[in-house]
Amino acid sequence: MKKPRELKVKPIKNGTVIDHITANKSLNVLNILGLPSDQSKVTIAMNVQSSHMGNKDIVKIEKRELASSEVDQIALIAPKATINIIRDYEIVEKGKVRLLNEIKGLLKCPNPNCITNTIEPVTGRFYVIATEPVILRCHYCERLMEEAEIESQF
Amino acid sequence: MKKPRELKVKPIKNGTVIDHITANKSLNVLNILGLPSDQSKVTIAMNVQSSHMGNKDIVKIEKRELASSEVDQIALIAPKATINIIRDYEIVEKGKVRLLNEIKGLLKCPNPNCITNTIEPVTGRFYVIATEPVILRCHYCERLMEEAEIESQF
Image (cartoon, rainbow over the protein chains, first blue to last red):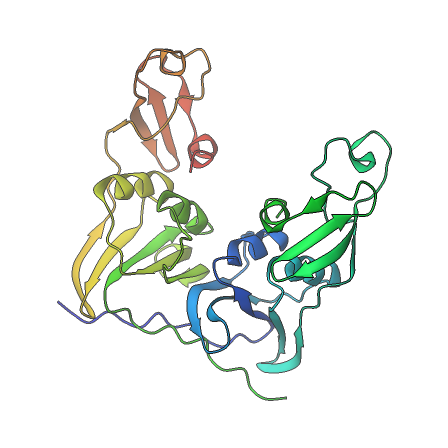
């Protein structure tokens, strides 16, 4: 029977390419970005070979640039991710996500007795105490939070 | 700055291309197939233009052929999907998913009082009473089940 055609993925005119995502974490990245959504053209490649990282994921989104709070969340899931912003077929900005020393408001503490989980309106606040893998410590109750717990929130 | 490179998606040597998936339903298809999983190379394109369907999704999986129960589940989510099996760079089989008249064992009835949800070990059984969109009727309690309820199970 005939040869399969190549699945063509054309360069995008305007949008964002998130590269060097930790292998198999692209769906968490989509969750952070509220994708899939109605008309958004998105391409995802999982477990692509990478000379730097062994395997990696790539996500390409047309007509979308990321908010800094979105980039901060991606850093928690994929600390080596790079963000390329494309306008009119050219990369106009190229950057790495950066894991902050302190994470405010993005995550909930998994300790049910933590003050942030009581009726008081206290926003989650964590210190990054390790990066590979990511481990956070709650500012309020000092509970440690590991990768799987972080991922389950995205 | 420099031009972005094309995201190259090479033809696969062995595997499956699921084409003509209902737009934005590719993540449900991944769920059915238990993906992402460790070493599986998967490419997904969401909201690709299609001459037949307006928009569609495409999923390409290396080194994987589908079980017939998986194909039956995909039919519930994406009734127009086509499955191309590739061996040694050639399409060796090309088929459409087919929505059966009767669905056995793949779904749970959403009616909590249905006999299939009591302690009795009775397998779910549904009749397909409409296809666009899919509507099913439980064999036991006659409760209708619409698309959103079907999708929430995958």
